[in-house]
Length: 71
Image (cartoon, rainbow, N blue to C red; front, side, top):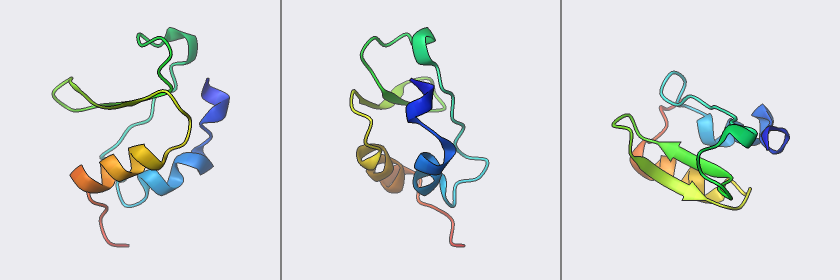
């Protein structure tokens, strides 16, 4: 649900990636039942999917494949 993903919670994942990552909160419109997080790559494939609401796995994925720009 969108209320579980306020901007402050995603800030550490998005830091240093301005313009590279876009967040969409789909809520009930999600095409993936039971999935709380999904990262869709630019080629349209799913790069990361998780059921839980802890962003640690998403952050690790993004850190590996899209390193943040230095501040």
